[in-house]
Image (cartoon, each protein chain N blue to C red):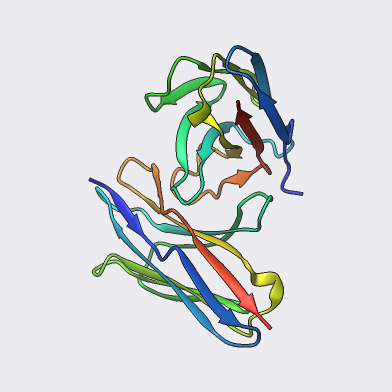
Length: 109
Length: 115
């Protein structure tokens, strides 16, 4: 079957760095998305990776290893507003999105 | 503001009621989606419409009935729901031609509680 694993909850300190991991098992692979969802709000797009390596966008970076079925989202210089859920979703061979259950990130002062 | 608007934001209904959720997108997209989001569970895809034609129905119970009158509007009609149907219902849209790289744009969701 197809499956996405990511931690349920993580806690980090304001100003620090946090890495949210995501492992996937899918029938074929056509890329991986990360979305951010603040409580009571819409999920919003953060990144899309289809090639191996690290892609940086300001304080956020996303990494992909296709051979390991692994991705991570790296958040630097954490701010209180980064408290949110982070959703990982892999695209399978039929271009369907397979979603993880999300990681709730709590930022403490 | 993501360009996808959902109403109502909150809905409480009894198991015998009939209600509808509405979604409208202002992005010119041609594909629209209904997802169910329950606490600590992955997003569950319910229905997909491409160019107003339903292309996915992921074994959703018939008490949920979608309607897509045009490429900008999507409805989810609800009747005789069960308490386990209580969840956040998210609408999303994207360009169907961007099959694997087009990001989904989500609405803020309709929080449904079934008593």
